[in-house]
Image 1 (cartoon, rainbow, N blue to C red):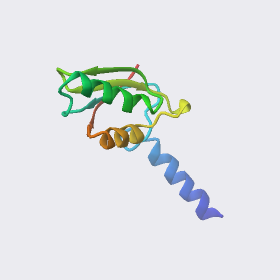
Image 2: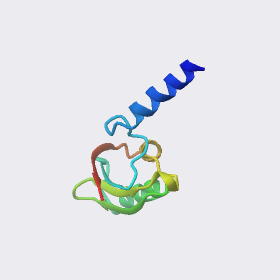
Image 3: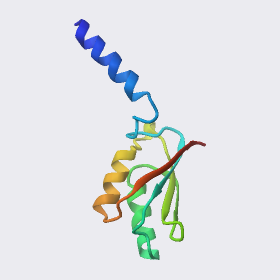
Image 4: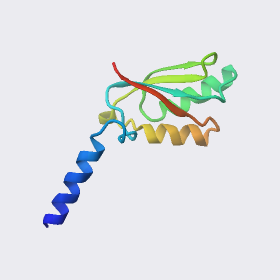
Length: 101
């Protein structure tokens, strides 16, 4: 029983560190670099992939080749799911910034 509590403590400690917790970004504006965005059709597909994961305030920039959005884990928004859906849609992305709204 003691080992279970120790494991839970270690897990909760490490997942609370912002640089390790890429799975969810609560109440933060997130910007992803998406180099494959080149046209209006790309913009729509990227917006759709991000929106499937309950992200809000989605803005896609063709010129900057990035997408920004707000993510609230309480509403089911998970960054790893967004990245996976973008990959499936043929728009691989990398995390550019996370900042508090």
